[in-house]
Image (tube, rainbow, N blue to C red):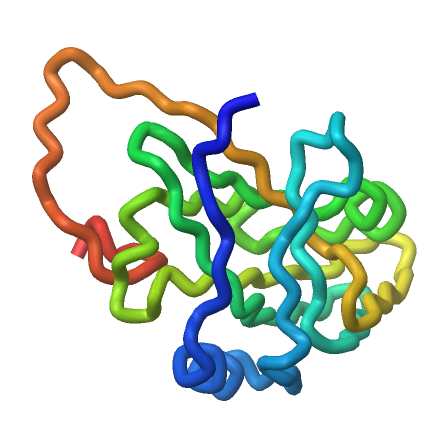
Length: 163
């Protein structure tokens, strides 16, 4: 297998700022870097830095405290953990999170923040404990067109490349 990235913690300052914006009670010391569960796993599990409970129809924005230094030509895609999606219809609000290599250099240090919603039709409540995996990230190679002319630099996350 080819190594194309490295996970790191964001600074305490960036984490605390995001925590306030997210209204999520978590301690910086409880941030755990993503890892694969088995040698055959494609996905890197992202772990909850604090407990959270979502009733059907509720959402939560989770500051993971994690950033990814990704080689050019690769992207990190984020998805809910399969079991949580299957059992509770837990979904990422942007359906699939796309973490580009240049996000690492943003003012927020490339902090990966995940917004989840419990879209259960059966009224199920989901509880995720601190340290439990709630999302998974998969690195993939991407390609560009022959006439690609992108030269702009990123600074930020959602919508930053179309401002």
